[in-house]
Image 1 (tube, rainbow, N blue to C red):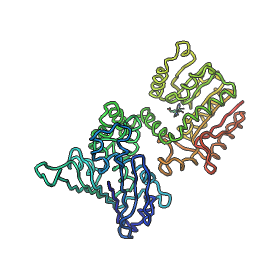
Image 2: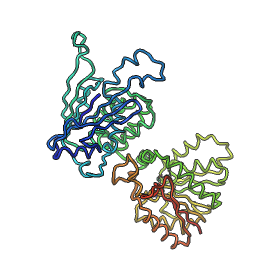
Image 3: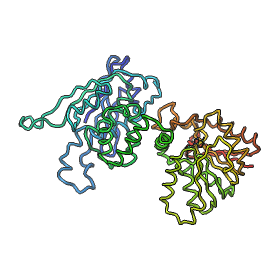
Image 4: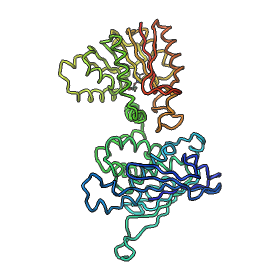
Length: 460
Ligand code: SAH
């Protein structure tokens, strides 16, 4: 299976920077299902072509499955399919996310590109192929192959050699291929679950909502699973017409996906709970509780006697309630819990009387000019003995493989702070309202950029 990507951008060999693969070298990568090789059949300043050759191991495909003949005699090793998407994500992951250390601007610049796929199975034929790529601006040429040259009566196969030509940023081309190849093939080599919605939305960002075939793309991408398709289409519709509650919901998933590889959420919950226990805080109010991540953990721990979650988003509270219902806790346990709708920037009597307040990944959602109001609501009026605040450390963002350079972790973040900025803010707040403050890092610490989450624990 061969994919080539050529450019006539001048100098064309800059394609090597964009792909993070040097034109003079032939490189091989081991994937779970075989080997991927990257090399350049052509590397001149006028024209440069990179090739991704995928050597899918047919024996690995059937191993452990109880071999059936059809599994040995299959087109999978020879055609473009979800294997190629996985190879693109693994071998060209940085380029796919639109990042390029050496040439950051070039990564965002439209350049003339031609992608050629040696064999692409197109269920739905050439028409469907054109319906997918032409609305995105590609010039498509497709050469169909007969089923068997010796038996022309058998007609045409579903296999095409395809050339796609367009002037666009390389990451857009890779995203289109990543999503649309398995859509044309109408199959996936792995089990499809909720994670797949997130991948579709992430790689479809900026083009899928407007694509005239988005419903078919979504259905096929999610292997025709009705529930997943419904969910994904609902989220796409929301992106088209954002309503703050539901946008928050899907963005929260995006943020979780960015941070997922290190299960940061769990580490954050553990650190917050440890800080609460250390300060003997048994009555806790979680401000900006969202979908109830922390509330859920507190409820499952009998140390905590009273737990209140507050959020401005009615939808988030509804989801939190559903998630908590699923815990099926005994009735008397529920008496410890309360979920209330409220805004953190307005004085509220209901926030008073707790040992501790937690503000987990919330301050970065507030407009900077409103931060002062929030400080007074919390530290002056509610005034719990302990306050735990966490927020992303922006310095760490360079470590997230799937986060494009310069982007914040979540669409609704109004800001993200460096360690110094956060500590300066927290020290000034502590001094103003008569608290002492200590800092802690959460998640794997990097010697240069620190840890992904920063935490401040205030006490008065
Ligand atoms: N603490 C949760 C959610 C973080 S997302 C967690 O760690 O999972 C940020 C949350 O803050 C969202 O649910 C959003 O609705 C809420 N939020 C943002 N601005 C708010 C405000 N002014 N008042 C109350 N909640 C707010």
